[in-house]
Amino acid sequence: MNNDEKISIHYRHGDLLTAIQAGLEKQGIKPENASVEDLGPVDEFHIGGRAASIHFLDQLKISPSQSILDIGCGLGGSARFAAKTYGAKMAGIDLTSEYVEVGQQLCGWVGLSDSIRLQQGSALSLPFEDASFDGAFMMHVGMNIEDKHALIAEVSRVLKSGAKFGIYDIMKDNEEELIYPVPWATTSETSWVSEPKDYRMALETNGFVVVEENNRREFAMDFFKKMKAASGAAGGPPPLGLHVLMRQATAEKIPNMVANLAAGRISPIEMIAVKGV
Image 1 (tube, rainbow, N blue to C red):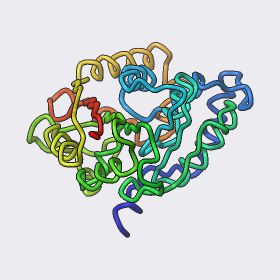
Image 2 (image 1 turned 45 degrees about the vertical axis):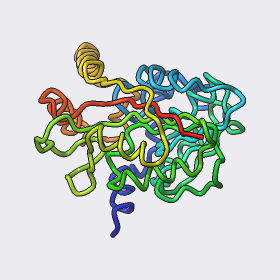
Image 3 (image 1 turned 135 degrees about the vertical axis):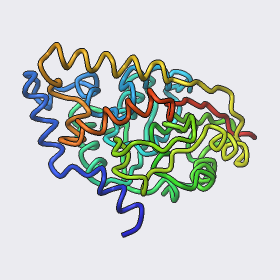
Image 4 (image 1 turned 120 degrees about the horizontal axis):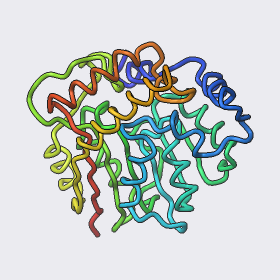
């Protein structure tokens, strides 16, 4: 079994569409009446959810005339948010076929099928022509990709000159070993968390200029503090949330990630880069 297969299996749920539908129905929402906002708690699989997406994607200055690529799109939550908020045409690619299939169904529920196309594939071999996109982003993706240079070279290939590329990834802050399991990996075998300098080097080598970099560690700690408080006050998790994706493993993966954050081993980092002419 290669690493792509291992990673895809890690994320596979098995009955995800039914689980999401059940979460909506607990709130009295029929799938055909669901909104992008209703789906946000479950379909934005990264630290900070929708709030993080707003802070991150606003920096890309996406416009309705643009065609944007979401790399490692998961269920397509960020692509749906971007299509609805900025009016852009979106494409998404993800290793996990279940995420892509369910994500396209969710696009139909919220009336965005014409604006978004999700497909299964690898970020290291993007199925798109050269200079196809006006911009691109990835959110919590690089931790599952060992060769950052190959990843960013492929992103550069499909972007037009002057295009913006946003990265919101979990990156290493010190040399301590991480505690596993975490949301992106059960063990270190499929986890390649790198330092910000490794991303900067890969970007610069492939013709990008980094124009913005933000460490979002304090935001992340506050996010998890509020999430824990809300769950405690409600006597359990909400009908829809990341626990729907991670199931029983949530009780171990989230505390481990918070422990890694608290110990300064990792931080979620935003990078905004521009492809040179």
